[in-house]
Length: 284
Image: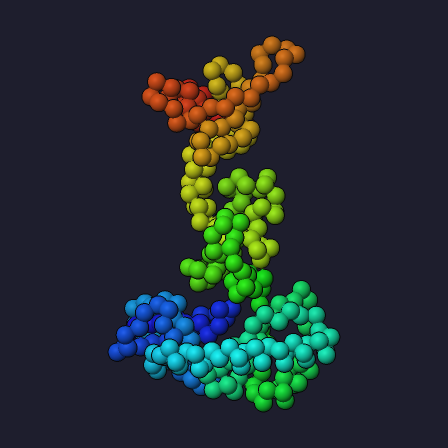
């Protein structure tokens, strides 16, 4: 048994369905059996499954004409226009983004974004009467909106979320700090959605590994006979800034940049910085 992970709408979550004899590839549109009836969906990934898994089946692969029928753009635009008109009438603080219409046209799922909690009960009633169908409204995030309507990122390439990314992961300020880009300001490390860029996660583990090879900021070290403390790291260069106190009273401390991965003839210097042989770290 094989498992097809599909989405009914770009902003919807993914669901798993089973199949055996069908020849399917990523990107195909299929008809699947759901608790609410048959539904058209797009395949995101295909994996080998376990026969013990109880999943609803993929019924068939959809042809080009089938896809055009179930994703009728004219019907979608009419539904969006009707919904926007009723949003304005009800004076609701929400931005309509997209709509998904079921294969049977009996269910409409409208996606919207809003900064506040929205009471859309009257809107649902009005839409049900207007469209003669079951209505659902789904609040999505700004990242989902960027996936739907975005174009290019600050790198000049198409947005990752519109290409190969299938699921969003949590992007934290820790990732930006580990890659030493916080000083650039939030605007330069944020995407079109206003959130931290997804690409901050791509090299995060690599930067953590490089940071682990350097003494942490605040480490007390001996360097060429002087007592100092690590005050900065340069991860890509694998160097550290060491603040050295002058042996002469009244002289200002100096800061030197030290490479901890020098050639063999300079290994003793690196060993002092790392506190391995000639200069152990202060236990305090």
